[in-house]
Length: 149
Image 1 (cartoon, rainbow, N blue to C red):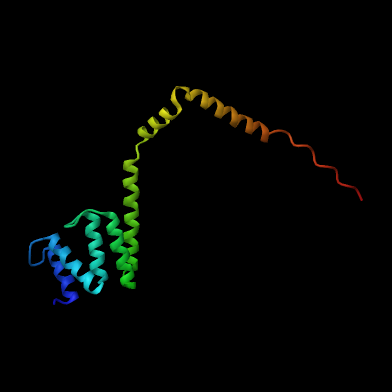
Image 2 (cartoon, rainbow, N blue to C red):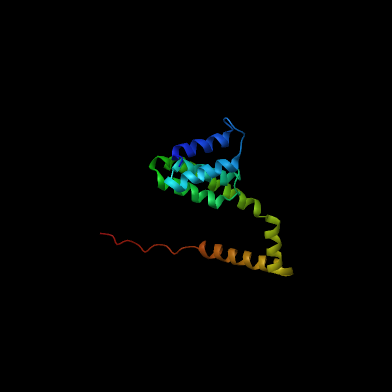
């Protein structure tokens, strides 16, 4: 049985190509062994990074987040690097959402919803807003006089 620290070092050797060729799948295998046997935070973090980037493992940001969370639970020393990785991951999730969001598609949905009478809806909305402005801008009655002593 190979020690856990040695599993992580073997994973690093295959990941960075130190003394061997770069092989992300073998590196992931070593990291997975270290994380499953002793819950090694470094191995879990490395698996999360490999899932985030799709290096030797399927690109899956949700699974990457899970690996990062497990690394933070496994060691208090991993909490700061995990927090930084999770911040980066949240930006990547947001960026993916913005790429999927298309303004043209949203406008087409509104056009289908409102149909050809969009101008009547707009006039009604503007009339309502103008009525609210007039209502709140009406003159206020003067305050009652104060009694003189």
